[in-house]
Image (tube, rainbow, N blue to C red; front, top):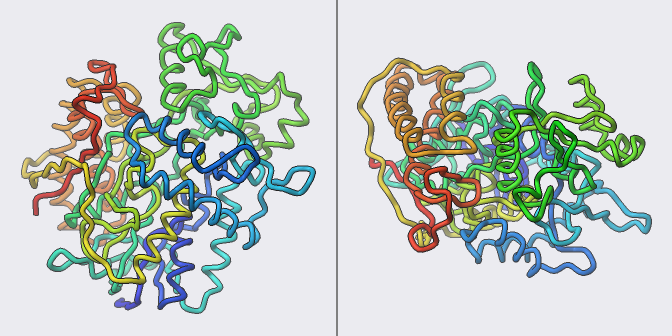
Length: 515
């Protein structure tokens, strides 16, 4: 199957859908999505979307909180774009019919989450991502110039002379296809499935990041992985995110003795930034040898069940009552701060290739994303990328990034398994990292990466091979970056270099494949 359009959008989360809406005003849009749009990380978002629209708040205050959470590595220009343009695009969502929660006077009800100084997070009960996705999807699906190919897995980018010309894909029937487009946007989301323990859905395998890197695009900051502190941890039950909103509305983290413990490690307590709370949980489990819990029991069962119906239902399926039971929690991989390196308009280092959302790295999150900035990022930078795709394009020259070239690998090893990759990544590149563990991980992942190159050449139409290849490629990039950065900052923690080192490491670092 050979298709042609003015624009190709790969991915159907908030960034891809928002971009498609704008692009459809300028030409024909082909949107590839490998699953139902509700299966994107957007659809799983529970926390909300942050915007400085409330009394006593301002974009400058939102910027200060974002920069503080980013641990000295946020790109200030990107943060300024996010917080100043965010209120306008959130207002647009409201005009389009997104049913955010309202207060008694009919204004958007604003919640508070970790590391925000004020209430600035809009919710739609406890499933805002699903509600935003519903409205955006309705606008895209009803547009006559948007053609959606569902269950279509992008396999590789088509490039010539350093420019992107489109992509190849596998259709629902397993037959290969190709899309030719003047501009291509990667909005495929993150790569949480690289790790054994994750809050991400099964489709979050880093395909877009891997494809861009394999085609010669630069990637950056992949050592910075956000581990959400509170994933439900029940043996035999899939990990489920227990939203930061639970603590924002008064939930407590307690140890097995029923004691609140986070302030033992962090002065800000339960509402410290995610990296700090996650490590506090890790330390408390190490100290006591027992699990830790999230408790809502002191808040009143009627309020808790009414406020958090989706989480209540998920806990019930695990045999627990959100309103009354202590919920066992532990950290899990949640969000990638790094990704395909872009400028503020989504341009990558390949001409005519753009990226937005979690698959991209603008530097807006620095080393650690502020809670509820992810949906805002997808919304704002998805729209900005679309506007840039409609005009003349040029290859950006991101400033301040050290670029290292990854040489093609030739060592062959036994074929890895998905479980083997995810287990090893969690063990050696998870919440706590070290030089010895990372060196062994890089060695193993390098050998597996070479093996996957051989397998992909012999199985170009195999979805399972594409998935495994993406996990191995992104896993290798994370491991290399984590070994290279000899400090601790944000989501990257080295037990052998436990301090932040601004003299040597206050910089962004890029990788590019030597092809």
